[in-house]
Length: 184
Image (cartoon, rainbow, N blue to C red; front, side):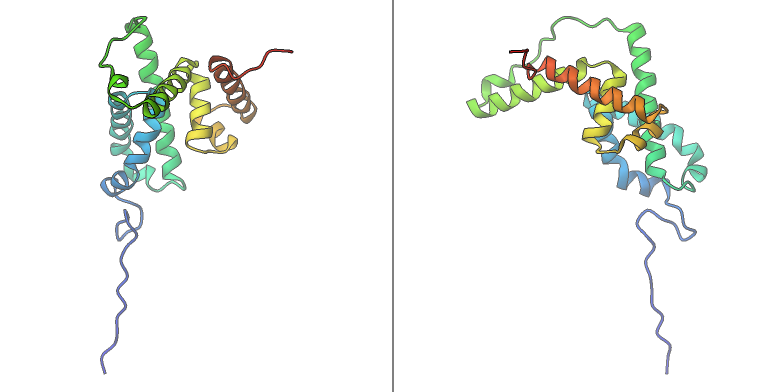
């Protein structure tokens, strides 16, 4: 009688030796990194550049990174750092203009879609107007749904500072969006 050999498939993104391969890991986690970068930068092309920068730095060190306990957290931190570096470079060389002219997409939408679109643009503009540290804390807390301790570890600041940044960011958003009621 022959023996039955049970064949087990390796985990998605892992090699027979254990840790995930770079290409497989990027294929699985790349979209989440792009979403994070998009919420930090506010633009698809900038998000792609930030993720590409972070991944190009991760690739040569992948054997060490993939052996870490939480690969996702480490690479997320690399994305946040890449965004911060890119933002600092941008501030030194770019001069923002008061108004950007683009195609008026609101003209071709129905009223309900136009209202929703305008509200999203208003919220996104308010988010982008936040100082970088506050925006990063708010995005990581409410978009990525990370706990304060995780954000503190990711950004390299104390948990109390993260709580303060999130609180101040939300307060600034409420004021900007007109949700704060004056004393009556």
